[in-house]
Length: 86
Length: 227
Picture (cartoon, each protein chain N blue to C red):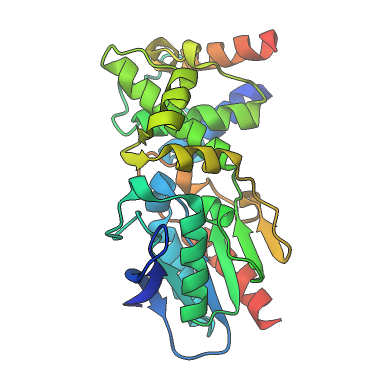
């Protein structure tokens, strides 16, 4: 697990109120948006703001797409792509 | 903890309205005004705020959590409120309850009355609060197949007002809030969230509490009030 992976899990733990060992069990296929009813639009917006702060990326609204939040793997891939682009 | 009220100036002047406040008031020497977090964060942090107050009371300190006009139980129309009204409300509450210090949470620290020393927990820029609410609106709209953008919403909002996360905000509220930054006031010490440990409670998708965080924040304030 690299730094980006670790930080992203920590942010999800904060938003979802999970313990570190629970988010450590997330795999690339773990479902997020559709599978977690508590992840409403306000929670997702807070998640994005926190990702920008802690992962040092800038997210344009045009890029916010349901597909990004489909699974943990897709969110991590999106984050890495943003970091590489930055 | 008792519900009480305080006389709060009406927006635009005129006779004072009454706003609610939760209070621990036993006429003690140390008296702390709580400037609550704003909007959705105010709800997310309400329980935490009350838990911090219980601990301050246990440490022999009186404390007061006023409703800001247009938020929580207030009967004022939020669409007519500007940040300056909140600053005046906190000033009125500070005077009414004869407080000695202030503890602000998140956006509450953007509208502090002058002259009062104290603490600001997890400071945030007004622009950051607005951006998160604008994003939530865009995400919710997209789920229903409607495309909105931050630029277009902001332009429309500044001219006509805007509903964000269920809150009706005037153009003036959007303009002023977007410009407010913390750390401007002398005598106010910032307490970054990391000092408390654990995850920030305003981020939680479902409201939660954290005893250790409440212990930590109350301890910092209690030590400061006694000093």
